[in-house]
Structure formats: structure tokens, C-alpha cells
Image (cartoon, rainbow, N blue to C red; front, side, top):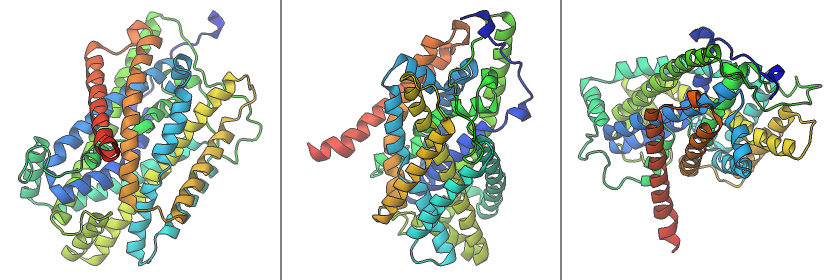
Amino acid sequence: MENSELKPFPAPIPLKKILGPSFILLALGLGSGEVILWPYLTANYGLGLAWAALLGISFQYFINMEIERYALVKGESVFVGLNQIFNWSAYWFIVSTFIGFGLPGIIAAAAEVFAFVFGFNQFKWLAIFLLILIGLILSIGKTVYDLVERFTKTIIFLGIPFIVILTLFLTDWSDWLALFNGLIGLGTGYNFLPVGISLATFFAAFAYSGAGGNLNLTQSIYIKEKGYGMGKYSQKITGLFHQLGEKKIDLSGKNFALTQENTKNFSAWWKKINLEHFLIFWLLGLIAILLLMLLAYNTAFGLTNNASGINFVINEGLTIGQRFFPALGSLFLLVLGVMLFQTQLGILDSASRIIAENIALKKIKHQEKQINLSRIYYTVLWFIIIAGVILFLFNVYEPRFLIVLGAILNAFAMFVHIGLVYWLNQKNLPKDFRPTLIRKIIILIIFCFFGFFSGLIIWDSLIKKFF
């Protein structure tokens, strides 16, 4: 490459100015693992599974940081690098992302909660309305990333403090003792895993201790658009109504010289983004998971109809209303409903980005020079929305079934992308910018874990039933 094409590795900016991408990734998990799957397991089996929630979000912290590492250094998403090494990868990400996140289970759960609060008999039509509303919201911003970040921060800053205060008022020392015991694997009548638990549901919750599936990979897109490191030189996706004249696109990042100054700037950036992701994604995410599990334990554990659908969420609201006053129970359900709505918005944005970027990569490879990524993004977004509407019209809308099915598919997708990103960083990054030995060992352990459980679930759920 010519020296004129080299760019300096930008100096790091203050921590408060890089906050954002981790909020989005955190919010992607709030409506699936935090609000639905972990509280569901807690309502039915108690707090003895808290250790797995802790392990799950810790795994995702290290997974996400390796994804961020690539984008920080290269100024491009991991999809660009993977497409250069594995020609088939773009097709895999298009198909696996659509299958994994085309199932609108989160918005179905939000609609069911809203329908209960407002006394609607049928939540299918409300779910369809909410899906279309998300599409309209994502279409109006000047840039999609800025809109999603602002919306996400608002929901988190309002929702999590409400959950914290409510939990502190409801719980006593015995609940917190049960939570502490759960963190070391001691449950009510079992250690680590209760007898009869669905491995598929357990692994789905584990995979959704954070974003889950291919959505983890959008962290490389988000930090690029936020301007982390070499992402300072990248382009952004504009809103549907703000893209006139935008035709050319360059998905590839910029290179920099391997100078002492550039290496120093990378190291400073790396420390800051590790801290940012630890505080926002890991710490705030863990607090959210554990508090929502604690709340489910205090209000719904042991009730007879918890196992059906998302009745445990309704039971939580009813119990809170009975202990204090009905309006507080309804407010709790409304807050959860809004969090679920926000999660579905984030999922649709992230999934559309993944699919759109991989479609664009294939178009570029076939020598199409005039490509509008924003137009591809919105075509994909509305295609996913229409597919979800069709599922609802055919009465496929039981929330927990859709969420668990999607999570199982996404857990296998995680197994694939963990291995791919590990190989990408080893092959494409300069030696001084690659992960340390301890990080390599951690990632390989996580890779083996997801591979083992994916194989176990496929064997238990599919092969044993049909062969």
C-alpha cells in the first residue's frame, strides 16, 4: 500500500465520549435473557442457576472484546475481514442471521404484556402494529446509529433504576442469601442444574446472557460508526429519508504504519474500551440479570402456571400489585414491555446491518461500484418486518417458544463466529495487536463450551427424535 493511503492511528478520546456501543449490546440482551429466559428459569427452579448467568455474561465480555479488537485496529467490521478469508462467510451470516432473528418472539412478548395491562383479548394485532412502528422509528433518524444509541440509553437509564428500587423494596435477606448461594451453584434441592430442566432452554438463556448469536458481531459495526480507533475514518448508515445522493460506499478500513506512536495509541484505546465494556456491558448487565432473577424468585417462584408461555411475567406484576397497589404492578409490566420493545428495535437494527453489509460485500465483489448501503439496510429491515407480520398472521406468535427456538439457533451461530473471529485476529492483525496468551486460552475454552453444548442440544432435540 502507498504511504499516501496510510492514516495515523487516532489518539484516544475521553471515556465519557466513547460510551454508547456497549449500551446497545446490553439492551439487545435485556429483552431476551434478562427479562424472559433467566427469570423464567428462576420462577420455575429458583436462584440456583445464577452461576450460569454470571458465567454466560462473562463469556460474552471476552467474545465481544475480540470482536472490538478487530474493528479498533482495522476500522472495518469483522465481516469485511472474514469475507476476504472465507468466501462463503457472507452467505452464512445472511442466512443464519435471518433464521436466528427473523423470529419475532421478543415483540410478541412485549405485545402480550401490553395487552394484559390494557385489557386486550388478542395481542397478535398489537404485535404487528409494534413491529411496523419499529420500522418507522428506524427510518426517521438522520443516522441510524445515533438514533438507536439515544433511544437505548433512555430506556436503560429509566428502566434499570426502577428495577433496582423495586427489588430493594420487595426482597429481604433470605432472597439475597438464595442469590448468593445460586452464584456458587447451590439451588433449592439441587447443585448447579436441577433435575428435569430443559437443556435447550438453559442453553438458550446462557447464550442470551447479553446479545447472543450473530448480534455480538454488530459490536464491530457500532464501534466503527462511533469512531473508535481506526473507525474514525469509516462511513455511517444514514436514515431512510436522509440518503439522497449517497451512492458510493467503502466498507474497507484504512491502514496505519507500525510506528511507536500508533502502537501507543492502540494500547491506550484498548484499555479504555475494555473499561467501557466492563462497566456498561458486564457490570450493568450482570446487575440487571441478577436483579430480574431475584425479582422473579421473590414474586413468582413456585406458582403453578409459571411454565406456560410468559405467565411468570404476568405473575410477577400481579404479585407486586397485591403487595403494594395494583398500579405499581401495572407500571412494572409497562416498564418490562418497553424494555422488550427496545430490545426488538435493537435486534432488527443489528440483524439488518449484518445482512445488509454482507449483501453489499458480495455486490462489491461482483464489481458493482455504485452501492447504497442505506438502501440495502432498509430493504432488509422491512423484509424482516414483513416476514414477522406473516408469521403472526399464520398464528405463530407464542413468545417463549419463538425466543427459545431463536436462542438455540443463535447459540450454534455463536460457536461458529467465535472460531472465525479468533482465526481472523490471528491471521489479519499485526503481531503486537493480537490477543495475549491468556485471552487466547479463554476464547478457546469458550469456543469448546459452545461447541459441546451446541452438539448436545442438536443431538437431544433433533437426532434422538428423528433417527
